[in-house]
Image (spheres, rainbow, N blue to C red):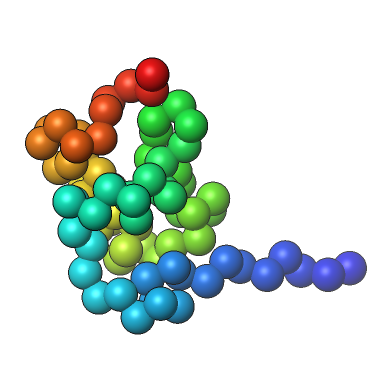
Length: 71
């Protein structure tokens, strides 16, 4: 029996310190095809960065950069 390896946090692996709500290409990696924010178990983010990403996605939706619903 093998244990599943946990995904590495994307931000820690790439030495990215902050999450910007204007960086749409980065945020789209953490949104499903239905427009929902992916959970931690799917995205592999640490809890700290999952909170930051969720907040940035919500800010960019309010600013009109990312749609609330898929097309």
